[in-house]
Length: 496
Image (cartoon, rainbow, N blue to C red; front, top):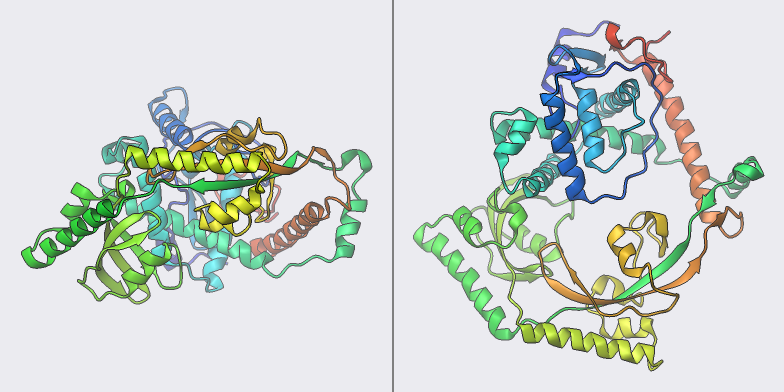
């Protein structure tokens, strides 16, 4: 099947794949490729990984020891997409920015992974899978804000690394990058969405594993917490509300700039550069309930009255309605808390701790009675593991900050009062405890059934994806450049 001219033009408009769109002119020669399984993330903070990726990009661009390649040379065509020579290096930098080790990933391996991603994205379009432009723009906003935090708010530094002349062109490229990635992930979800596994299949999966090759499960435990926040005085709340009312009146009555108010006064530092702007979609509850309710109650050009959320006090300006999508800007003010309020919160939590330690009340009952974290208090303070959606945390996979807070606790021991901050900088205090510890051990069918079931289900999903991929490769126009045909592909990309 020949690639039509209009398809080729379309691929040029969608030419970039990866979240780190850094234009590289150099690459190393590589000789082997396999389908890449997800690498284990290094224990490293987002700040460190992003800075490392930016620094690596500069180092590679400045290097004189690599073999130069043709700028934006086409490495492959997959359906309505192309892969550029520079995309492989961009993907490696993106993985590094996510904290994933790239030391053992070859050029050919990464190229093979890009072929897979484009195959998924192409067939997502063929299957009429739709992704939300509002969601993609939100991803772009978050990524740019994350980079700005690492460059002290300098957009010029980011433009230099991305080799882009202005923020508009940067956002356009990142939009296409994210959209392609989202299409790919949605296609993969569709392939495995209805796959289920029976108990008999789980047993067969487990029994076929040789005893000396059965998986090891690390130490697991449950974590619970009690949270107390310093109280904001009524006088401070009134002052904040009146200040927001003043901003609204100045914009509506005097023609003042809402964006200027955002830049000068908003405590939502992540959105200041965009003028406090967010795009909401009625079908996607990405913002807190109070924010959404107020935004969706407005008409174009209206500004809400001040309202409170868990982050502070807001006013929202509705700029434009585009079907289900709402372009809004907001100003966030976080009330100040006095030193006395901070001391009072710590003292209150210390008294709760004394009651627990003395046996007057259980940790779970104290959480239900006193904790101010609504997400956990009903469950006795039990934290949900975001990776598994249950109460169990494996120590080796636990968030490093949480691990540091509980690593020295014995079972049912209550921590001292700990100071914590949310993303807006609001201070809160908490107690932590751990329970139901299970030491690391070889997989046991009865005790570890749910984990074994997940492993068996993943194997079944991988087989279904492999089957789908083999079929679609034969049904899709795929052209691999001569420079990459020597790679030892594990999938039949060369259709031999």
